Every structure is written in structure tokens, then in C-alpha cells.
Image 1 (spheres, rainbow over the protein chains, first blue to last red):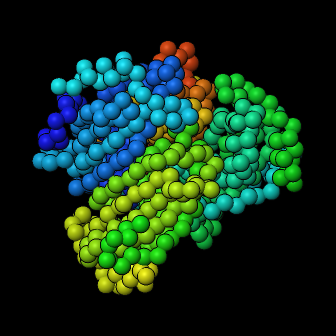
Image 2: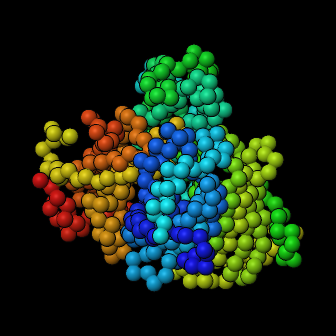
Image 3: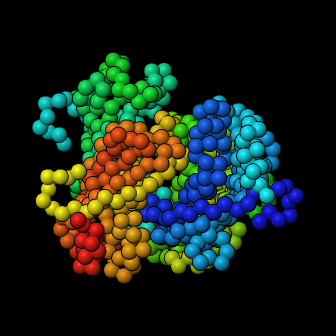
Length: 143
Length: 143
Length: 143
Length: 143
């Protein structure tokens, strides 16, 4: 994905999510806003929850979702263990872009695809540059 | 409810909740932890969200659920508009007890009943007395 | 919004949503996937939950979110009562497009904007034309 | 736990849950209804999601929560990886009782304890005996 861009992009991260009762609705499949939850869990694993906590507690820096585009091609069912695949790139000192997909077991194409733009902000929700240390960490993950 | 106690108890508050897709799971009825959400929404309306916000911002006081007992007698379905009925009493300067029920449209008995004990604490999650002003407000609501 | 299209578009629907504890996360504002919930609640009120239930039970027809684009410009806080504003148009017998916004109290611009494409499908998640009766109902709502 | 009963009780199952943004509210800790979600995830892992799906699809049997008692002793925080500990016993052919606890990393006592009674029912929500095969499976897990 994102093959046409010149911006260097990270390797692919894989994150499994099991689908429980809580994830479905009475139509029998996953309730669509929950996909945004799984994408966020996967991003938290790329950055690491401990890092996120440290950035918040020590640097007063948090990430906020600025834009999401999501396409749902196929329903995801109870008891599925999905594979959330994540790529990302750094767009600026304030902004990262995440290309994420949900694959069902034995799926031939992604069930859900998304592009999610994150911005970094302080606790008063003002834009705030990511610290260099974080950008270096991100760069370690980029091909 | 709670007819045997000598402790004065509030009047009954009614709060309607419409059941949406998000509330159900693939078994076709409301996913049970959501009942605790509706009970909390109803409690927030008794106290008022503005009061809760003021208590948090100005007094650093919040409420935490300490104990819940809940019995689910009947499934609640998509598109139902339920009536959440709430009574409460003050047990101490730290603790209020809430007796709450969920009634389906045309129900002959409650679909769900609960007893929920709330404690008041500061932002560091230490027990903290409710301010007298709040206790007086609560007493206004008690028969 | 959508001023350039020639496709007739519905009037604006307003739907209030109060923000409770359950809606926020530890950053202090609404957790972003919840916005998709509020948009769906608002769409359910345009169509009516009873109609949705009838379409499902009698016509085996449901709606699924196919695409969402959402931009979050501003955080939404605990105790806010937001105004969810909804327009929609019919793109085909299978597809409706919903333009939705979230306005905070006294907001000068929307806090969140979204474009959401819905498709109609049967219980086996195969595309299924909306019945004429439904399209006529929708047309009643269109200017 | 449950040391005084003569009813044979299962071994202890351990299930880890990582706490994400979605789990917390603006007070900074886990929103209490979510504990019931974690307890259910843990129960689903004891029974196995595949078994649950098979029971539903082939035997039309599901489990419903009938009663919950929960005590929240301590707040659980973002980035915690909690240990959900689960015991259960069979009370009748219709009913199982689950004793569950949440332990924080390095916790000296459980942060949350619960007793949850489940009943088995068919798709019309009528009581239905658990099949012998399932009871035998449960008995395999009991000391």
C-alpha cells in the first residue's frame, strides 16, 4: 500500500485481535466504530503503551486522531481472530499517517482498510512538536 | 423497593434510554455491561452533569462505583425505549446507595434491577467527604 | 455542505447527544470512535428505529457502513450537549450518503465533520435494493 | 475464594488484558462497566470462542448473565496489563457460577472481584439445559 509515495514508510506490523460478544451488534457482525478501536490498539503497540504513558506524564504530549478514512468491504464475525496490519510514515514534526488493514482468517483481501492521520498535542490540545527522541524511535521502524 | 429500611430514600427518577445498534450484541439483545452505563447516565441526570463537572473542577471530587449487584431478568431489544428508574439514599458522608431498575415498554416487572454503592473521592482516588452543599442538594431530593 | 452537487439533498436534521463519563477517555475528551456512534444514532433517528426494525424483520434488509471519512477539528468534553447535524442524499437504490457534523454548545464551526456512505444489504450481507417504499420515505425528507 | 463450599471448583485460569485509551474515562482510570467486559472475555477463553460459536450455531445454545456482584477496590490505569483470574463451578444443568478477579501488575490484592451467575438459554431466550458434552468438558476443568 502507498506504493507511489516517495516518503519512506515503516515495515508492516501485525497485531491480532480476537472478536468477542462485546464487538458485535445484533446484525451479527462487528459494529463498525469498533474497527477504529482495533486500529488504535495496533498503533499503541507500535509506539508501546509505556512510551505513550511516558510521553503523556513527562512531556505532556498526546496523540489525537485528526482524520480517518475507512472502507469496510466485508463483515467480521464473532470468534474471528483478525490480523491488524499497520504501516506508517512521518509527515511532519506534528503529524504521522497510518495505513491500516484488517484481515480475517484465510482472507484473500483486507476486510477493512483505513488511513488515519494523527497529530501530536499538549494537554491543552494545542499542537506540539514530537520530541526528537520520538521521531528517532519512529525512524528506527522505517525501512 | 428498599421498603424495610428506616433510612429516608429519594423519590423515583425516570430517565429514558433508546437502544441503538451499538447497545446490542450478536445474540440479539443488549450486551449486559451496557446496563451499568444506562444506570450511570441516569445517576448523572439526578446529580446533573454540570454539578458533576463543577465538583470535579472546583472541589476535585469525583464519584466511583464501589459495589454493584445486578440481576438481569429479561433481554432488552434493539429499538426499545427503556425507562431507567432510580432511587437513592445517603449512607454516610462518603457513600450513597442507588437502587435502579430498567423497565421495557409495557413491561409488567423490571427487566434489570441493581443496587450500586458510590463513594466520593479526590483526584488521587483517596476517600473524600462530600461537601455539605452537595449533601443538602441530595436531601432536597429525598422524601 | 455539498453545495456543488446537483443531487437533491435532504433538509438538516438536528439530534442532541449528552456526553457522559462513558464517552471520554483519560485524555479528558471524547474517544474518537464514539463520534461514529453518535452519527449512527442520528441516522437511526432520521430513518426511525421502528422502521429499521421493520425493514430487518419483514424485508431482511439492513444498512451497513461502507465508507467513512471523518475530520476531528476540536475536542468534545464531558457534560457537553452536542448537536449532531445530518444531511443525506440518495446515490442509488443501494446507496445513501450522509453528511454529518458535530457542533459543541456555542461552537462557531463544527468540532467534527463526516461523510458516511451506507449500503443496503440482506441478512447474508449481499447487496439488496432498498424497497420503493423506503426510497419514497427518504424522498419526503429531501428538499 | 469460595473455600467453604463443598461444590467442586475449577482450577484458576489466567487471562491478560492490556488497558487501552478506549478502556479509560476522563477520571483517569478504567470505566467500571468495562470490568464486566474483561470478565466475559476471560470466560470466553475458558470455554473457547470456537465452542461458543458451535454451541450457538449447532445447538442454538447461548449463555446469558443472570446475576453479577462486583466490588471495585482500586482504580486500574492506562497501560496496565491486568491478570484476570477465573474459577467456576457448575450449580445445575442450567447454571454456572464464576468467581473472577482483576489483579494489577505487582498488586498485593485484587483490584476488582466479582461473582457472576450464567444461565444457558436457547435463541428465544428460554432456559435450556447444557448438553452433556459441555458439562463433561467443564468437569475436565474442575479439580
